[in-house]
Length: 296
Image (tube, rainbow, N blue to C red):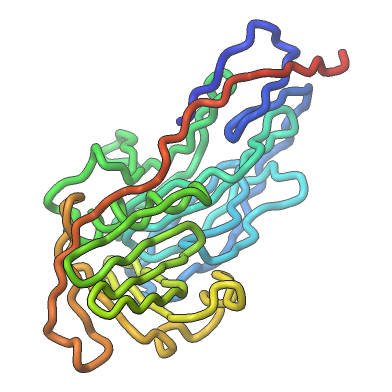
């Protein structure tokens, strides 16, 4: 949750990434909308989990795949079936009185046999997305965060938290994996830039990470002109076959990550150890420098 400066005037409007604006609106009845199955990796149907998205939340991306889980009036809950594992969502909130100015990115871990609910908690001028499941009648958070990291999560979970997830929220985000031979810089919108320290060769492209726990984690590196290959085109294409390198995170503890490889053949059996450095600039809170009075 991002906190913004609080205003005492109830009719004030604040600008900022998580800023909310308020007018008067009356909610209508909830009629659930079935979004079917989101299962791009082909996980067996009996392992899928059911997720309910509460009214007024619109989902625009799941694991960087473009989706359109919303309605014009947005006053309906939605249900969808998805694979277990770690998944990321980009969402907006709009109930007609209060709305987010930009998408909010969250990650959550889903386990076969559990049902999940994505909802929101509004506190003043800030909003926090919640992902919960019920265990023995008690709601428990499924949000993926560093504080909840445990040994049971495994290397894929740690890799997502420390390497992949930090690059989701901001175009300024950068995470560097570095060793004596190679630098791999991960950036926003699935961009990577690689430097071979021995030859000086620089390459760039986009990458895809498969995060379904039933399949394990795989990172597909596709060398390409990033101005010619968008992330949407990448995900809509045949990246599994097009990838020049397929890496598997076999270890990650937030400080180091280890890659094994399944492609190309000459790299099979090799392991590379990298130091993880988060180079993302520290984001400061946005101060309110203008207040706009809404019409009464």
